[in-house]
Length: 254
Image (cartoon, rainbow, N blue to C red):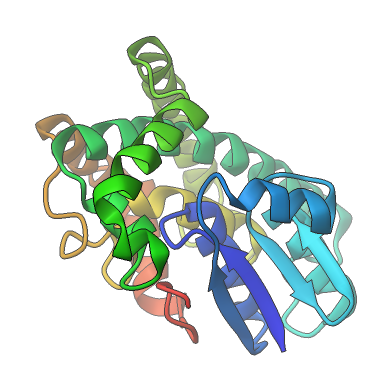
């Protein structure tokens, strides 16, 4: 059985889950403890980040490398087109989405944690040692997240500025491709990458960022969501999730 090692709240892990779902491959989503995950990841892959895919004897770190591995190993339902130009366009947009994801995480987490401990509740999970000792684990986890993702005000402001720039760039690319998909005429890696990275900002139904799960957000967060939904890009992400995100595994993991 394939296993995705993940943080449930991570949009990069959502991307990895979606890649496997798109390929119609069975897998288990296994949660790791933030901070503690580094030793496990380093041991298995030589990296210290999630997601990690274990497929039989293969260990693959990084959502982009997972996508490339899946296309090589399971070519049905290709994520990348055979056409060289379309392939290069998709990989370029995927790279842009990776940067986008970093800024979404920094800006979004800073605002979410300023209003509520709900993100920490999701990270702690429903059971286990973190839940059992949440009185102690919650402040430690909050400190790990704040320091690990550098949520100081200067970096958060910089993240928002770059976030605005990337969204306008992607919005223009979508328009130039007639608004249905980012590359070509069907869903692929570029779409999955961008939609996954923007899902937290749009609080997409059925994801960890649905308002049901994140109870309180700042006015700035709400305003930015509305601005994004006013763009073709925001409506596109919402449509793709509604029509083409067929989740086979609960994002909460085990």
